[in-house]
Amino acid sequence: MRGVISTAVLTFITYILFTGSTKPFDLVTGVIVAVGVGLLVGKHLVQNDAKALNPLRWLWGVIYFIWYMLVAETKAHLDVMMRVITGKYQAGIVKVPIEVKTDYAKTLIANSITNTPGTVVVELDDKHMYANWINVITEEPKEAKKKICEDFERFAKKIFE
Image (cartoon, rainbow, N blue to C red; front, side, top):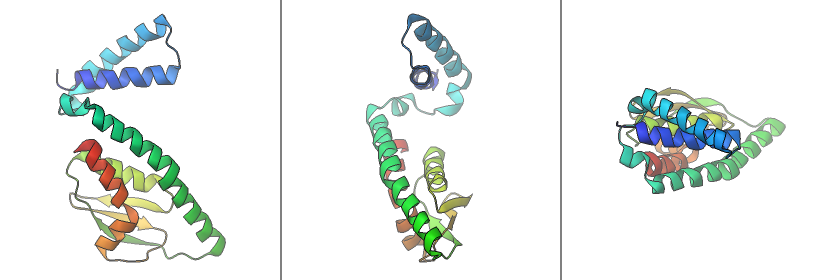
C-alpha cells in the first residue's frame, strides 16, 4: 500500500484541475482513474506516504511554483534578452556542487535549471551537475552554484528532503 494513497490523491487533484469540472460524473471518473493510477504506479513513485502527504511540503511546492514562474523565469528571460540584444555572452560548461540526496530533489533542480533560459544541465551525478551556462562569470564551483542553482536547491530541500 506504500505510495498508493498519496499517488491517488495527487492524481485525483490533477484530474479535477485539468477537467475543470466537479460534476458527479467527473468526480466518480476521477476517483476511478486516481485509484487505478495509485495501484499501478504508487509503490514505484513514493517511498514514504507520510512525507508525500505532508501539507507543509505541498505548501512549499506551491510557493516554489509561484516564485519560479514570477521571479526566476522573469529574471532569466530578461537576462537572455539583454545578452541577445547586446551580444555580450561567454557560454561554457561549469561544474556545480549539489547537496541534496534524493533523486526527486536532484530532478527538480536539474529541470528548473534546464527550463530557465540561459542554462541547461548536461550531466548529473551524486554530488555535482554540469550546466551549460550562457554567461560564465566564474568557473569556481561554489560561486557558480550561487549564481545558477542555490535558490532551486533551497526549495528542493524543503519540498523533498
